[in-house]
Length: 608
Image (cartoon, rainbow, N blue to C red; front, side):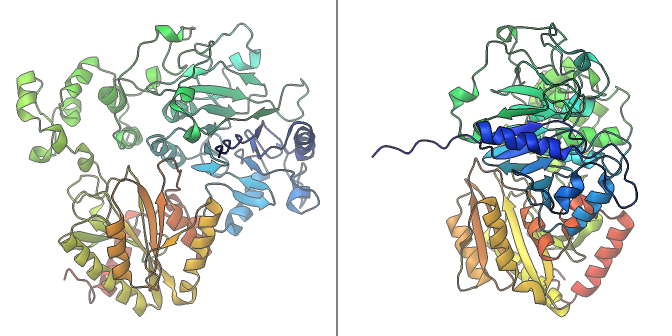
């Protein structure tokens, strides 16, 4: 029997700044869809709403017709340009009314979705990352540092991002391109964003889509540092522009997750070097030298971001990215020093802090050498298999300088309990292994017994408040330090937890398996431990009645990192708290919350 042909790749329409001209945009979409469709989705970048201010209760542009049901959006449409005079008024209500998780968009009306903040989501098999808003002083319509940091973290995850959506164009994008036929708007230095350039250089998408410059421009594909695939940049003009510039464009990319290695490595004849690493002249791909593979330390971006926030940008400090990997996507724009000699020392396992500051505060716990001589480096360095630099910068290791010890509630032998950073609800806590361990499922048997005691104690504490615990854990191949999340829900909502997780799973295209139909939570964890071999990712949730729902995550699957929290935010009608970054507290508030928890928990605390 012949094998079934592979599914056809999704067909996607791209559009530039709508400026509120939705009737004109969707009329064109309908025409294109009828003549050359069907298309699966429309992705809009640039300013989506009208640049005109509203008068009274009226809304400029055509948006009211769609939001109030007088007109229909023809195909699923996603937009990132959430700014303009009327945007805050429209979108604040949408955010308040939103339910559940929103990486794939907050629905404003049927088929119209607002991509808020930054995230990565799956669209018909395509991995889509986006940065909503524009650069600015902050507030509505401007992206935040947290939005940028979240994308930097996603850039370290495995897999290839198919599409990256931004509103503004990346600084330096024309470097290395053939400028003989480039429109003058492209050469205008206005409207470029250096932050977007840093992000695209790190994310390395196959397609980068942007708006805001009022011109259509498709750059030649360019190679990416330390990645096999090329990136294509497409800039789109405004809807209904007077110059008849192209404002809608169709693509049909095969998802990278389904492509063969040979297809991913294909480089068209006109491919150039990366504009973010090369000088501003065209260089044949064959002449570029291969750089060493990038270091996969998941904390490099946090390290540099933290120092930039502290104002340590005078160029005297070393760039962690360059020192550890030999390349830096920020290039000449980097605020830190690119020192080749330091890079060579780092390759010989010399401690970065020692190189950067002349001393290492970790002392004997550091697994790296504290000597610039080759003999000293060999003498001081520990075997590679024993080195865990990641532990020194881990947010959950109690010995790490980065741990926020004021969040700790209780410390046992194998586990400790801490207040969640940006808690969903006041008593949202984490149960965390004391040792640096990637998941709780494969912890030693004696530690499992202690975890059971902590769960029993939390159950009694929540029960005293008329609540029940929901536990969940996401385990990926990149998991660094395990944390089992415990979120209390009112007993009146406990029966709905199972239903909402099943509905959320259906929305993402999978079904949970039930580990322990009889509802014995302890037996469920034993079954889970016996079934899991540590070679794949998984997400599981323990329902209030003790049933465990399990989803094994395929290596090519893009699973939302905040899935459990987002689902419970929907159940609790707290959509605005689905992202922990929206729930940050001052240190004083955190200390008070921990003190309140300890006072009520002390009679149950297994560590006391």
